[in-house]
Every structure is written in structure tokens, then in C-alpha cells.
Image (cartoon, rainbow, N blue to C red; front, top):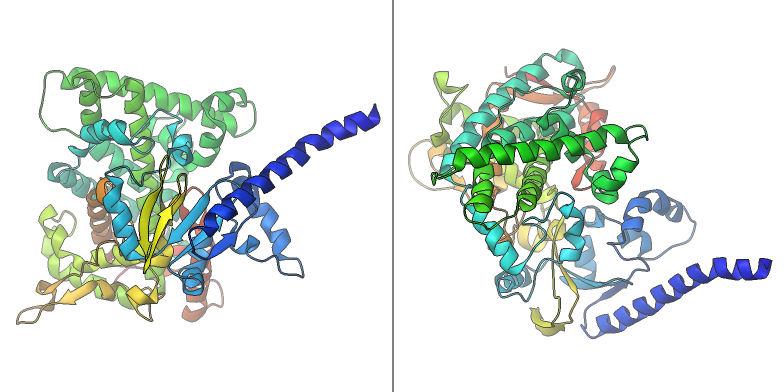
Amino acid sequence: MTTFLLLTILLFPTLFILSTLISLLRNYLTARTLHLPIIVLPISPENPLWMLTSPYILPFFRALPFSNGHFTRFCYTGWEFVEKSRAHLEFGDAFVLATPGRNWIYTCDAGVIREVIRRERGGEFARPLEMLSVLETFGANIATVNGADWQRMRKCTAASFNEQNNLLVWTESLRQGNQMLQYWLSAGAEGVKTMAYDTRTLTLDILAHAGFGKSFDFQSRRDRMKSGALSYRDALALILENAILILALGPPVLKKLAWVPGLGILSEAVDKFKRCMTDIFDETTEKTRGQRTQGNFLTSLVRGAVEDKLLTPEEVIGNIFIFSFAGHDTTSHTFEFSFMLLAMHPKVQDWMAEELNYVVKGDRVQEPGYDVFPKLVRVMAVMLETLRLYDPLISVVKGTEGRAAKLKFGEQDIMVPPKTRVIFNINALHSHPQYWGDDALEWKPSRWIQTATGDGPVHDRESITIPTTGLFVPWSEGMRGCPGKKFSQVEYVAVMVILFREYCVAPVKRQGEDDIAAKARAQSALKDTGMRLLLQMLHPEKCPLKWERRV
């Protein structure tokens, strides 16, 4: 009996290991037909259990006295940020990760990226939906569908991203930025330790106003925690701050575990969000009935569901969630990286402030008009350069599904087999010396500025230099490019106007520190960056920042 029980216990792990080895061998043999360099990994990068446990397991393997090959170098989420272009300089512009799950072709070839984007419209290379199904927690949405479903959702959402809406984004960003600045100034010499939470509140408030017609005053996380009952904004903020856990467990399981400390408030937030979305849906339905005027993002979704019959109510809520997530966290992290980088580079702050003081004149400092947005090219250059080296997405995933597709890698024509991932390695693409020069790893916003010859002030002759298509893809490109690209740019520039025209940011010095030591600590906080749901600084509180009036 004991022997039988022991054999039964051992059977399942043995079968699992055997199945994994067979799958790995099959995928390795397929990878060989591509005639690209191959890196073999024993675990798939998209294995959910490994994604959760690898941060705790890999340090043990790294501490071993002998080499474990490519395992600890490539077998974790976020290795692309650590490697930058190094892996491609070693293995070539394209290589394959052969895993038990799928084969992953990583490329930083701008020509290949352009070609894949061009052919996505015909369905040859599409988003692998099984990787994104976890984002359907609140309903199917534009990020989790392809083909005709994507086209009808895109039709309902694209119209709301217009100049009328950008004006709302601009004015609300100025208002929220000023309120956040006043709160940060009140921190005094101690500086801001809640930067990550505060930038999330900022971007969420702007999105709520411009996207959903809901207006809030900026509140710090501490003040929000004291406010008592959850509001719509608080519920959405909690959901977005704990998105990995909620998406992993799912609302039904979360509700059953509500007795666990910390999970009860999350379950309440999920219920509150759904109730609020249902109420907002009903309210907006009444307001928009029979009206065809342009509205905000929510209005477009509701009209698409009620009048055009293109969306279900569940898809409306699903799209509200995904646009809240995509339009809030990405910009929030970009602000965090920008502030830390600017604190380390006071000369870049001065360079940016020169433009701000030239373009935004006199008593217009608090509420400059939207017409100044295209003139603030240095501010935009700071955003683009930050995204070049610290893109929250780290990669763009495409793939072949039911049929093979031919691609040209260098001089080779390669037939990409069905069910193969094709990854745009953004970190390698954006840091490759072939495209960006020998200083590719240096954060230098001035690289984005071109100055026309002629007379007159230099600020009137500066413009953004646009990279070749496929070379810079933080918002992706083509038909699946981010529809909120300009939304995020307008939001970023407006907030930077408020924060940096009259003020500057610097690391808070610890006792006995000089400027060099404080800058080194900021660099250490910046280096301590990794993947959670997105790429972000893991512990920005290690280097609090302070805002001071510019001398």
C-alpha cells in the first residue's frame, strides 16, 4: 500500500517533467529550421507560476558557485531591460528562445519590425490573445480581441481621441499638476516619499475627467486612506495598484478569500468598481440618448453599446478597465522615471526651463493655452528620451497563429512556423548603438532636437527629429498603435509646465551627504527597476525628491 501511494505521488511530477522535455525537444527541433541563434530555456517565460515565483527562486541559482548558462540570464520577466542591446550584439539582430511552451523570436531589426506591423492588418502577425486573456477580468476589451471584434471596438473608441478631448486633457493636467505641486512643496526639506502613489493619483484623476467626465481634486494617498468609504476613484486606484493579484485570482476567488487580511478591501473595490460602472453606464445612456455630438471616451462606448449596437454592456466595462489601466499606469511610471532622471541632471532641467520661460510667458504660467503644446519641444524631448530607455512595456508581442509566414531577417528569408511568438525587443531597439550611436545608453534629451538655420531666437527654430519608422515604438505603431498616444503626450507636457517653469527637483540629502553622494543614491534607486505588471522603479522611496523654487 505504501509503495503504491508513493508511486502515485511520484507519477504526476514524473509525467509533467517528461511532457515538458518532449515539448522542449519538439520546439528546439522546430527552432533549428529557422537558422537563427537558439537559446534553450527549460521554462516558458509566460508560465504564470514561474512568473510569480521566479523572483524568489532565481537568486538561489545565481548564488551557486558554478555557471547555470542562460537560465538565470534570460528565464525571468524583465531580462530585456537588464540586457538592453547586449544580447543582440552577442547573438545578432534576431534570435530564438526555445521553450516548452512556444518558440519566441526576439528581434531589434527596425526593418523586420516595420514589416510585421505592415502585415498585421492582413492577419499574418497578430496579438497572441491567450497571453492577454487575463485582462478580460472585467469583460472583453480592445486589448484582448483581434479581427472583426477589434474593428468594432476600435470604431467605438477611436472617435473620442480628438483635439476637443486633448483640450480637456490639457486644462485638467494643469489643474491637477498645480494641486500636486502645492502638496509636494508642503513636504519641505523632507521631500516626497510617495511619488509613485501621487503620480498614479494624478494620472487617474486626469483620465477620470477627460475620459469619463468625473472631476476630483488631487489628494495624497494618505489623505485618501483617511477619507472612509470607497469612492469610484478610490476603488479604481486600488484595483490598478493591485492589478497583478486581482487578475491572477479573479474576482470570484477574491471574494471567497475576502476574510484574508488585505483581500477584503480589494474585493470591496472590485464590487464598487462594477457597481459604479453600471451606474455610470445607465446615467450616460440617458444623457446621450438621441444625441450625436462628440463626447468623451465613456460617451463613445455607451453610444456604441446602446445606439449602434456594437458593444455589450460587459464590453463597455471591460474597455473602461483596460483604458484606465493602459492610460494611467504607463504615464504614471514615465513621470516617476522622468523626475528621478531630472533630479540627477540639473543641467537638463535648466535647458528645459529656458524653453518653458520663453514659450510660457508672464501671467500665463498657471493656465497657459493649449496652443503652446506644440512649441514645447524640449519638454517633449525629455518624455521621448525617458521612454527610449525606460519604456514601461519593455516589448511588443506579435505572433503567427494558424499558419506560417515568411519574414526576411537580414539576407535570410525565414519561414516562421505557426504558433510562434515574434517579439519587438523595445529595450534593445531603443538602445542599439547601430541606431542611436555610441552614447545610446546615455540619457540625453537633446538628441531629439534639430535646430533649423536662420535668424531669430533658437526656440523658434527647434523641432523634434522623427526617427525612421520602426525605430522608436513606445506606443507601438500601425493598426494596433496606442490610440491614447497624444492624450499621454498632452498630459505629460502640461504637468511638466507646472512643475518645472518656476521650480526644480533634487534628491533629498541625507546627513553628511554631498551632491555627488545624493546623485549616486538617486542612480541606485533608478537602477533598482524591474517588472511587476509594467516596468517601474521598485523602491523610489529610497531616494525622496524635493521641489524648490528655481533661483
